[in-house]
Image (cartoon, rainbow, N blue to C red; front, side):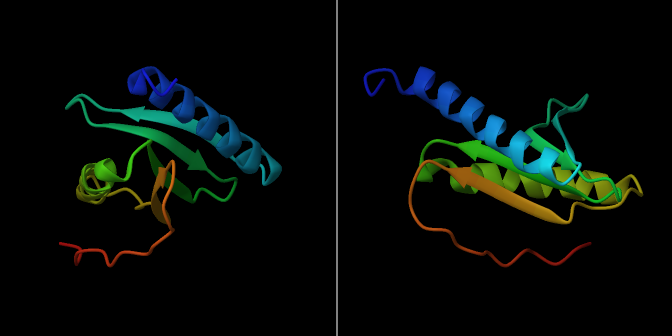
Length: 108
């Protein structure tokens, strides 16, 4: 697997999606994939029974965190512009490293 990082990345993403689905279902939530007409794509959206939702990008390497975070922020901005409720949480899941909390840019 280490010789083929692309395939390993797909496997890692699917394992994360499986775990997110298990956690979401425990609380009555559902998991979805997001893709819009501008080709913006987010790996996982979890919708809870109360209507709140979270968005997740899954990346194998730490080097992809900034790009993934920017994708999530772009999606959040489009959702707010459309007049819908923003996500309760934005998160990038990686294959290693430590967890950290980032400051979000001010909403427009």
